[in-house]
Length: 231
Image 1 (cartoon, helix red, strand yellow):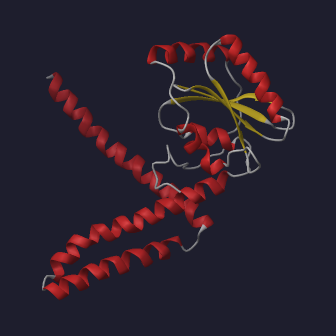
Image 2 (spheres, rainbow, N blue to C red):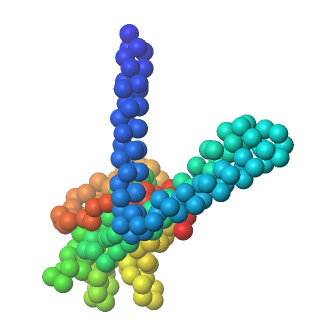
Image 3 (cartoon, one colour):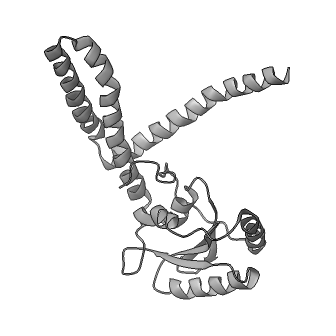
């Protein structure tokens, strides 16, 4: 009976996952279309020629229907590959320059990091976000040149609550020594993993005690863990 219930649960969850996936694609298309109104035509411009080449090869070898059937998913995949690249670019463009954009990108990382947005906020809307993972603690700042002082203050706070834990600092921006918002997720992946699972669990508990603040985070289908084709 227990086994039967388990199978039913999995069967029921499948349609829900498909609906979520479809909604994500629909939302991504809506945002991409705002940034690139001709995105559908661009995708068709890739899909149709790829499929046509497959059919022509089929005609040449005497199997047009078979080759057309085989190359249809290949053409579809090529068009979708192009779409995901454009969707990723449009998603970043939709939040670029907004307050809390860095937090939005950090929170889109699927696993490995626990993100607390806006652990420190200044009157001019400079802010620091905290990400905790196996590399240690990463403090990400957004705002003016004064953000460096806020990062330093937050670093001292982290070191007081979790002495000996590696603490890294990043500043989101286009200036020298800064990380562009589009490359933030990729930069987070480059930190070496130094903490064991038990140490990470203890660190998360300590950082949870510090807490954070509530801020509005830009909405929209952000690329999750850069699973989309890399830019």
